[in-house]
Image (cartoon, rainbow, N blue to C red; front, side, top):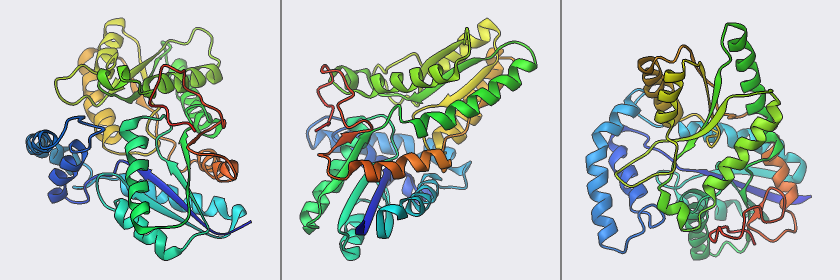
Length: 344
C-alpha cells in the first residue's frame, strides 16, 4: 500500500466569472495544439478570436449563473475518486487541474509539492485521447513539475474509450430513455454526440475520432437493441475551418425530415458544462423543434456515477508498475496510422 497517493484529475476549465471569459478564451486559442502557428501569429489570432467571441460566450455562461460549472463538477468527481481510492494508500488526496483557467498547472504542481506524495496518478476527464485535450494538458503539467523538481514521476492513463465503467452508465440511461420513448410511439433515433475537432487535426494523426467511434460501437453493442437507429455526430464547431462530421445540427435536421424522435447521448463528455447544459439542452433542443423532430431527450453525462468513479479508481491499481502513458488495456489501442498516439 502506498504511503501518500496524489491523484490529479484534469479537464478543459472554464471562466469563474464574466470578466474571466476573454482571458480563458485567449489561453485556449493561444495553445499551439489548438492553433498550430508560430508566435507572434498565434498570439495575434488568439487575441482577435477571444475578443470577437467573448460577448457571445458571456451570454452562454450567463445562463449558468455567469460562470462555468465544469470546475465544481470536476471537484465533485475528484472527491468521489478520493474516497474510492482509499484501498490503494494510507493517505489519498485528489487534485483538480484545469488547462485554460484556474486551478492551472503551476498552481496544482505547487500544491503537489506541498503534499509531498510518494506516488502521483494523472487521470483525464477525457475518455478519448486527443493532442488538443489530454496531450496538451499532460505536457503543461509535466513542464511545471519539471521546473519544481517534484521527484516523483507521473503515472498517466491516456485514454479509456471503451472502459466498462464508462460505457455501462451510458448504456443504462439510454436503454431506459429508449424504452420510455418507444412505449409512447415511434422508435427513437439515438444520436451519440461528441465534441468536434478540425478535420486537419485528425488528418495529422490524431486518434480522437477513431476513439469516439470505438466508444459509440461499444455503447451500441451493449444496448443490444435489434434494428437500432443510431448515428455518431459532432458538435461545438468554432471558426471557418472544415470540421469532422456529420455535425450534430445536420443530424437533427435529418431526424426532422425523417419524423423520428431523438435521444441525444453525449459520449465524449463526462461532466455537465456549457456544451451540454446550453448547447444540447437549449440550442439543439430549439433546433429540433424548428426542424420538426417529434420528441427530444438528452441523456446526462456520467458525472459521479459509482461505476464511472470505480473505473477511474481501478486505474490507480492498474497503473502500478506500468510504463506510462498507458491506455485502459495496457496495450496500444490506436491503429499505427495515428502517429500522435502517446502510448508508451
